[in-house]
Image (cartoon, rainbow over all chains, first blue to last red):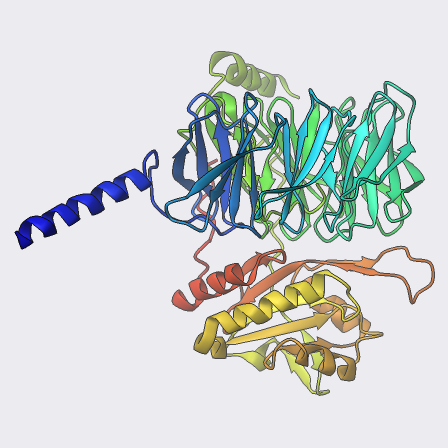
Length: 376
Length: 206
């Protein structure tokens, strides 16, 4: 009888383990926010866990609903997943090897998720209802619900997370709302404009918004919420990216294939260099001395941030999504949905390493909680 | 773009579009400037020091300034917690804070500042030239943001933690936004594999 009881206990234990890890290819915690990145695939209803330290696919997390949008918080050790066809926000506990998950109804259908810089809060935006919410992740509590917020660009938090900024291209304005619902607006351009999303200086003091119609980058004093400079850059600039030392903001100029570096010390553009046709984004790395420009078609050009000298050029042969650079500034990861691959670059050597393959063809953007990007 | 490059590009895009590869079209890569980690500075007690002063210990080096309102205290706080997490292993680690604001950060100022974070943290300063040379040896960047008068001007600086080996040679970089658990984990990796970076890049694919 004792042996039977023991056998039954073992069977139950095995069954529990099997159930708790159902839909996964591994069983580990992924709470190192500087190491593990996450990308969703709606077609496979899975989130892919990328180990950027070992440069390999670490795990696959199966979900009930398509993970259209993924965000991650290092502070709360949570992966946040949303589907475009329902109003549930799913939280997955990354500190738990079983990856316990909980979903809760937020009443809107997310089209954007953004974790605040301190990591405690998440902004959720619904572009159909024009509603922005801010939730405390740990408590699953809504802190703010703001309506009539129209934007076709990513929203961005203030450094302390108490404000959210957005660009409204229908009015040519930059807007903010704080957690108490107070709003402010600055008009930067004419209506029906080509403003980019705002980028933030690393100390949170300044905002930078590219204006594709006027070929300038607007500089905003965020505490005063006043625009105080417009810096001439190349043709049709996109969203600026900052070096993590706060020294430069670099704008990709989409129409003329150049990038412009703006010195935050002088408020002047330092150089505009020919880089690559249709530059999509700029990824600064390796101790803030090197940056990569990635084009719409998948060309990658490395240049010296200090001098603007172009060093190396690669062709990926397929359209990339926005990439991420690890917080040690060493590794650039670029998702290539068309190839089911994550291209990996060593930014120190400006060289391409073996990529991470075996990903689905609809892999989404990669989320990394602690990255070298301190300005978005 | 030369005809050969155009042909190559067309081949890759049209004939084999999903074959992800890389082609170095401009091979004029600059020689990689190494992180040598050399310095000749003065510690918080006024003693002259070099990178060899701390031979025998792994070092973790951070550049900043004592008036820094956000990044420096946050990073040094996480570093302090990492040292606590390392427990007895922390005896083999020398944390070093190098000021990029030597005009303000005298040895006396540094002495009070570093003591508020961890007993083993040393604070280094020097002449403007010495500090610049040390920063260059780590490829660290710093300068001054616009701020009106000199007193209110806020320096900017690299946000990285440099992990150096027991002879002062470069091992690894840790992003300053990393938390104490990550810092302690990275240090442990190097304590286990002394003298070699466990994250040395694999050979280039091209």
